[in-house]
Amino acid sequence: MSSKGQLIVISGFSGAGKGTVVKGLVEKYGYSLSISATTRAPRPGEVDGKDYYFKTQDEFRTLIDYNGFIEWAQYVDNYYGTPRKFVEQEIAAGRDVILEIEVQGAAIVKNQYPDSRLIFITTKDVETLKERLTGRGSETEEQVAKRLKRAAEEASFIGNYDYIVVNDDLNTCIDTVNSVILSEKCKREKNGALIEALQESFSRE
Image (cartoon, rainbow, N blue to C red; front, side, top):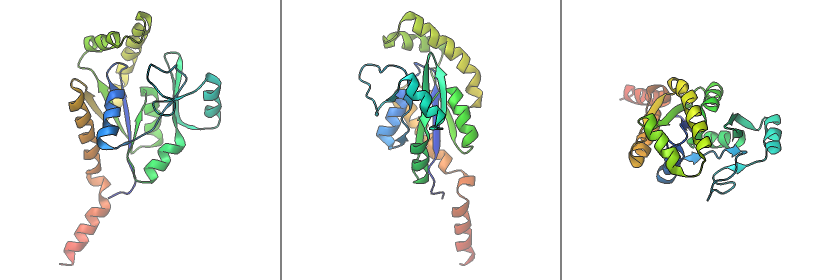
């Protein structure tokens, strides 16, 4: 089997719970998580270097100039980016890495890393998404409206994803995403060396 780790990209509508799903995958199954950089303000309880690397606009643009990101994108007036060094070190060491990023960034990652797998987290319908955004209580009505408008734009990109997982029950969603990732490891094309070794062993019997 391949000794390299997998690169898993997880996206989803704001309010669909993708962040909570990713946190559950890391805590329950031990995946490596690439911490994104962002220029948005921290939400209550968020810690710099743990939840995000919080940067100023100028700091972020400097990193762009130095090719420090695998991908970066502007989303609802703020920048988000994936630091390159950590991701490539983890994959080389054989660890599976999760990137929690937006649809624009996911397409860029897929172009750079064709073997990466894209998973989209969604609610079962638009009404549920609106309820979750409103219930979060961390944004104004105007911000909720912006996120819903953005979700409508993101919906046109869902067809680019390898897997779509509905987050109706959190624990079920976490386990389902883990199963998807494990199934990728079992694909024939990722086990060429094992197949050859087995066939050769049996030929000697």
